[in-house]
Length: 361
Ligand SMILES: [Zn+2]
Ligand SMILES: [Zn+2]
Image 1 (cartoon, helix red, strand yellow):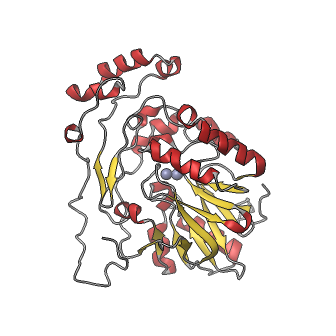
Image 2 (tube, helix red, strand yellow):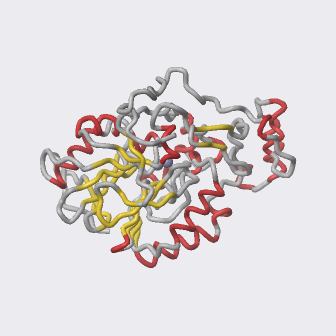
Image 3 (cartoon, helix red, strand yellow):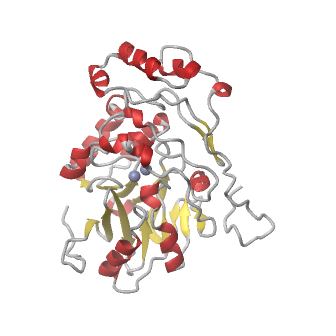
């Protein structure tokens, strides 16, 4: 994939071309995209890690000229590395932010995401994931719902596709004309949890980042949906864009082998998804305590790992859940969401018709 000539003030290459009229910008660990119409108007897709507003504005100026602003910001989902600058930029540009209805609780301060699962293994990124922010942002005065007809506000010829699993309201954006997909995290093009992959940037189709994926069944279904699109170009949230036959072949393979190659062998959400509704997290399976030593996981010693979990579990009588051969706890026995209905989140003023500018229930 050729890179653009766009450079920042220091002359360093700054943005990359993912597809015609689609430009990418990497903010440390995550890509965001500038998608443009033939007339030069454009939409920002995702908003990078916290603190990246300046870099995003600089890149926008490089691509579209100084003081250019988008028609809208569209979010593939609300994870912290995709919404870091959204509040600041939406205010600055005075533009709406579009997201899927199921993503709204995490964008309006109503609910945190299901807790990440550091027990899935796979390197430093996963093990450090407990340090990532978990509290939802609140952009309730800016956020709008993506239109039910599948169109993408501000972008001609694109449609959004619901690709849940990584998050419940995850969407990918598809341009039929040249079969370009802005994937979000439905699948990624590098091994998301490997610190080495972060450096080498080898292009390879992988499942969604495991430490933040709480519903593997849905995630599998979503990659299957995307594989039916006969993609020509895929620009993912993590890793460099891929294209053509190699992309299609690897995506097909991911669909076929999903439970072997994408779903972690062990982990909090492997046998049971987090339960969420339109208000946020309802319940989550019990944590699996400390990460099982990698050597055990690699050895595939299921019984041994199960025993280790029991030994390490701090949750006492709930630790039996980690043995998938045994019966699962009923929903009533599972811990209620650790963070539902945040007390410090302001209540919606339902009397004020302008406070919420969408029809979210
Ligand atoms: Zn994500
Ligand atoms: Zn991500």
